[in-house]
Image (cartoon, rainbow over all chains, first blue to last red):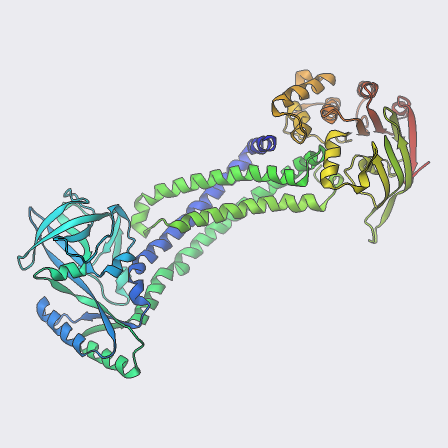
Length: 397
Length: 220
């Protein structure tokens, strides 16, 4: 308790130096968290599709030669029927239409496996989008100003005039991720770029929904959107692979999973090329400032520790006092840094670059604080161990 | 009792600038004595004082303090000795500049068994004893040399040690202040404490019971 008091009182000595270090550490923590949160947001776009990306296969998008969705769908099914090898079709559905009482809806249907890895932030509810027949099509709704929330029932008619009933089980947070284009950009380059991050527009824009594709299929009339993933359940032979490539290429645009995966990694890893050097530069400059200020502080503390030593302290007690003092400074800075980051997270910056908070934000913060505390404890530990008290007193006179 | 037997101290051992500071030194100080240690600059006075104060090491020999062989003690034991049995007054005062008088005097109490709620009162008693009560809340960097020396003495006695070591305590002080400081040491000695003072000043040495002279690392 006495040593704790002594350590705490140290914070108020050399107050301006401690404030300087405090601010620098807070800035580093904010910068690191922004960087990590941005990396998280990019990985977020990839994770729902990671289960198909792990296998050999294709992203297939049928051609737009025929305007009629049904004709396109029939052609697609014909092409699928000709495929060789043991394949699984991961179809992506789309339905659009009018909401009873006003407005439009646009529903995108993926399979259950997709939603298991879906982590776009929700303001309420869950991604519990199963296939069971409940009499409704469960949906995760985009933010809206029409008053729809978890539990709401939405009566609508598809483009053919058939009635469909949706039940809201989750609502996306605002700002949110949603495709900027009129639909999915099913090309290797365009997929992730098609995602915008922004505030959901008002009531004029219609309702944006994620649903289970199997439920859309159950509806009497549905539109198959022009895309699907095809994965091989066992490694295809060379013949099967080239045959299937040629069949699909005749019917539309084909991109292999390998290309898609590499492109996705390029997207998620593009941060390394652009953002990390910038942040690394900022953090280096700030780190130099912190180290310089910390060295000044430590040298002045060495004088005190040598006097403590003279008065009967052991090396362990001096290091304990140093750690207490630095813990207060660094943890305090971390708390302020996290608070500032949370403010920025809820600001327009999130719409500009996209940020998602995950466990690794806490991990990076804890790592920075731990390293700083370790360094600040290491210097007195080494210094006090190397010299006699007499030498320390004369060195720090 | 302080007992030094065949003690040797070598600086920079096995290096080109090796220096044998103390050669087979034998010193015995009985309880309650007030002893002056004199000698020319570089004779080894401060070196001997630092070894007695457990703030420096020695290469060979024996150092026994109140029946305990200090040479066989670990760091924890030596720290306890410095805290409980020995009070050290350094030549440059060794005070923490941005602490107040009270805070400086309280430092040894943080590492002692003294309870937290009695620390302040204990420190104030010592501050009163050295006549610095009025300046208790003043930062020490605002004090004169004589005042700083008083604070250093107050800190040295706050844990009620049986031995007080003072390295040139009056070296930088004027005559009047020197007398005041020596009065303090005499008073502390009268209380039963053993006092060792390193000094160049013959007047200071005259106030002590006896003088130990060191020349070229040897007691003459």
